[in-house]
Image (cartoon, rainbow, N blue to C red; front, side, top):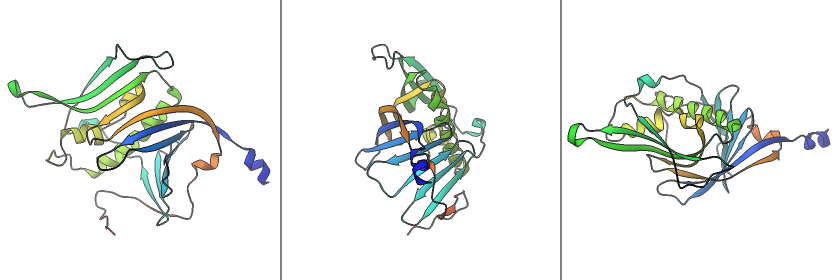
Length: 231
């Protein structure tokens, strides 16, 4: 009966972020994280949402306007195939306040460019994280990142070029979310100039139907050979 269903709720974590990227105003993103699912919504955006199913390791990106779902399945990849070998620097931030009694660390991924006197470091990813915070959500967030990266790996030719530089590969392609093994990111900066700040995290009760996607929508996938037709 309907009354029974309406009472059925599930405890999940809600993580809210402010995200910034070049060319747009900052926007708010909310993640609902359960043992099995993630749901990602952009505030005030009714055009769709993202569901990640950790059991099947599949991302569903739902678009209402054409009733479609982009399906991204897990594709295994090896870091050995990356054309770059990034270096990680992991340092405690001495003067930072603690969060839930835990220390904040800076996790920086960089590459060395040039040699000899011309040698320089180029930062590809910079993350401030709270060490050891919320292990119950970090595992699934890392798995989600690995599925995103597996899709990216599948789309590239592994050649460094003017448009796809070394940091592109280190940060946006071969990114296994290893920082999640250390702690929960509260600020992130990426080499495509996208950044985000974690504003709040809470436990809330939701209707488990939030993790469903419309069964009737057309599902499709993209691979390197896909010709994406522009409208």
